[in-house]
Each structure stands twice: as C-alpha cells, then as structure tokens.
Image (cartoon, rainbow, N blue to C red; front, side, top):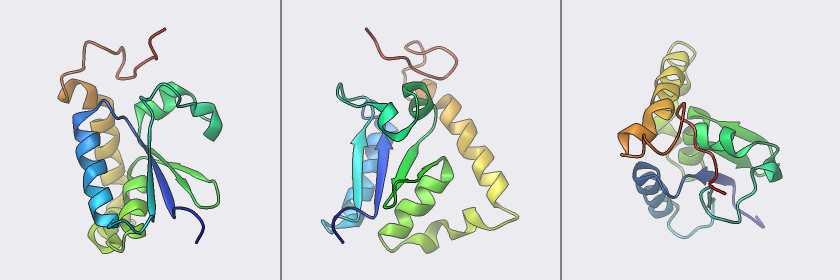
Length: 131
C-alpha cells in the first residue's frame, strides 16, 4: 500500500476532535493506515475534495483510498475499520440502528462548537475562515 487507507479531516482547534484524532493515531500504531488533515490549518483547501470550508467544518469528513468523500458517522466506522477495530462501531451501521446513530452524530456536530467553548466564534454551528 502506497498511502493511508483512510484520511480523516479534523478540526484541529476543537479539543474533542484533537482527542479523538490522538486516539486514532495511537490505534494506528505507526502503520500509516490513517492520515489526519487539520481543516483549521492555514493551508487547508476544502475545494481539493470538492467541498466548502463550511461543509467540512459542519461535519467530520474522510477520504477513502480511491478518493471518495464520506461524512458523519461513516467516517468513524471507516476509521475504526481501517485500524482493525471496526467491530466496535459495527452496531452503528446496522440497518435498524444506523439512522439513530447518524442522527445523534448530526446533533453532536451541530453543537460541538458550543460544547467545546467556541459557541461565540461561529454562527449557525458553522465556522467561517477569518480573513
């Protein structure tokens, strides 16, 4: 394999997101199965994956080996699957449970800035890049 199995776009300014990213890096154990891209970094360009900055700030996104973009809970399912722990999140993809977990994640994503003390920074749960 020449590159990571899965690339995750994270908000490096979000404490919860950084914590999850560190956990996933530890689970990867240096195998290079996962790559992390900080969407808050000055050089990040959401257009490179066909999205806007507001899109990627509003919900977690990931990029598969073949360049497909996924978002929401699917990112976590694929990330844990890439490091061999897909069984942990398998129930979140079961037909009866999937809509519930996906809805729960959307609610979390819409409120994560407030949860992390950044609620005053963004409007409508989405950030815009400062000029």
